[in-house]
Amino acid sequence: MTCIRDLVQDVMSSGYLSLHTENTLRQMLQTTHYGSEDIHAFANLQLAAMSGKVKQESRELYQLAIMQRF
Image (cartoon, rainbow, N blue to C red; front, top):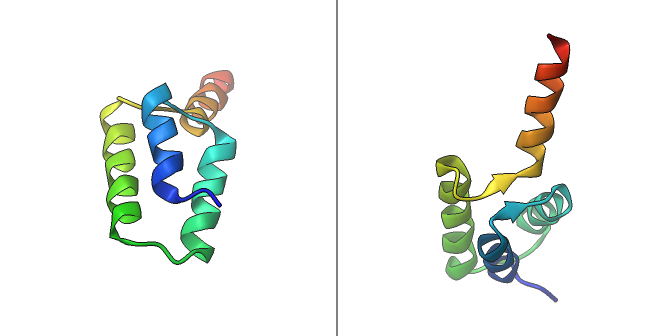
């Protein structure tokens, strides 16, 4: 089974967080027993997303929906 830190490493390498991976991470955080390394990796992913180092498909879709309103 893939662990959270492995998924985070893939996202950090590609610089892109897809909807599928975002949903997988969300599900794993809700249903999986994880260690401090996984939590640390997830926190780093959050920081990377907030700083723009990682692009999020969900954020891009949201911004597109807002732009289409105008």
